Length: 85
Image (cartoon, rainbow, N blue to C red; front, side, top):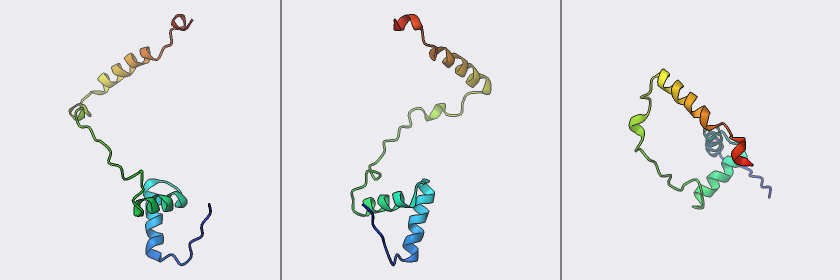
């Protein structure tokens, strides 16, 4: 469906443009998102569960530890062809 909106007040245009810029989406998607929110039908308003149980580990590794982890992780990315026959 295509819809043309005439006479949009400048402050509403600015709000749409701000939403689009903030969310890095098109103006069209921003209008749809804002309409969904206004109508109480937004899938974006659903609360997201946040977990903080691993926060204490953030930014605790040294560069050497991170490098070692990355090297070990590479081993898990190798496919054993014999297992897939």
